[in-house]
Image 1: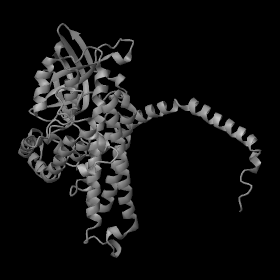
Image 2: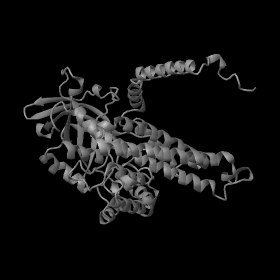
Image 3: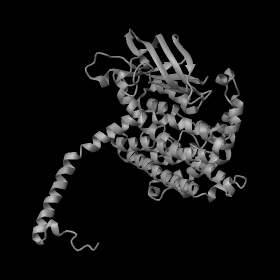
Image 4: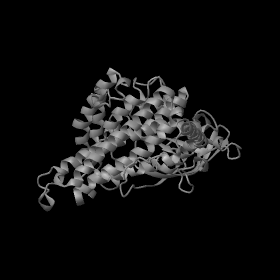
Length: 448
């Protein structure tokens, strides 16, 4: 709620955004979280789940639109389609959306569609926008982003191998993709695919291109849906997909040949902020469940309620500290993106991307521990929450890639700080002489 906006960023939040934030919070708490249970029931069981489209989701979408909650993610000043919120303002809203499984889709702000819509809005031509961006923004279709490949180390995107060969007025695609999130949904109509169009280019960052591939194109095979610690996320799903002589019109190329890295970097920056703030929301909900559990009068191990055991309150305090600190890291990145753009905020985005999932996993693990056996079962949202957030340490680049880059950049200050410290030492020697003291006298008056 707007009353909970950290004071450090309050001046960056418009009154319009503050009012919308209150509406989002109420919508999530009173409508979406109760609807999560109904959504799961309407998805059902067995293979039929992959064709399911729960009615409650459409009802929520109608209600969201009536409340003015729709497509809030496109940042102000960057897209003509934007509803007028900054990255910071939407980030605060995304935190609330992260407390519910259905909330993000209910307001048409669900991944991977958000990132895909940003690609089309920022890089797509007018024909591509009319064909794909418009129905995505209306929430009548969904999309998938296909980059990761099973046979290579996809954490280094230069390794991407899917072949894109120009053949007249088409490109012919051959290769394999997996972790194609969203590909299981029957409403998924468009894939945004990264492939290698110029493997002989001397610049390895200009070998890749991005192309729009309708999901019903001949030659595409969805082999299976991958699971995350046993959860398959039906009907959304994470597909393992192959392309065999898939012909795609050259007009479906986004921005131009060899522009793939430019596009994915533009896509992933804002997406990492969205993921991070939704993850803060999940951590908050985990803390709420832990508070409920430790105050349950029916749970009295060793004759005490859980809250009366000292270590439990320490968990609560640490969780509060860690969530609040992580939130400020994300909001700082969002402000820098708003003021200077995603490229200038790469360090801050990486900090948020690495810190927040680790923080949330720690908080969720404490909540699981407070519930005992129930914590790892389907009787609480905690196990599923942990599984989903664990993937964020891999998604959009594994933590280690970001840490290596941050470490390399920080280490560039090495010579500078060495020179500074040497100058400080030299100044200290001058001061010793000036005041007629020697190092041997330092601390000589200390009584033992």
